[in-house]
Length: 85
Image (tube, rainbow, N blue to C red; front, side, top):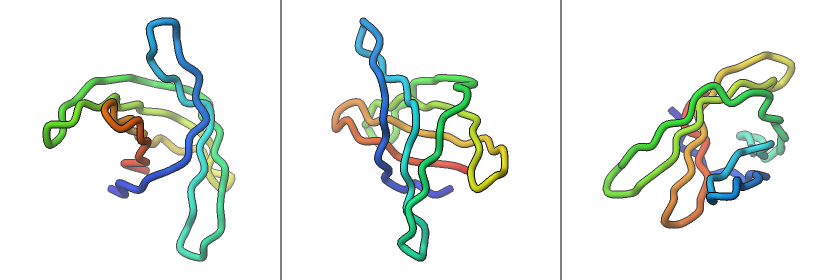
């Protein structure tokens, strides 16, 4: 688990649901990497510590390796979190 805040480019459906396109993550050496979301495998809603969130299980290439990861979108604050890699 990472639970690291990230910058995300997303588009929104007509009903206001965000769909992530790509995100930027900063590693320990302060180097930024942009990761394209190749596929959204599953979307769930959850309530964590009273905060409603959308959980996106996605697939994409990170540093040349195909990975499955989880992005969380906090509905009240509109913040994105890279939760698991």
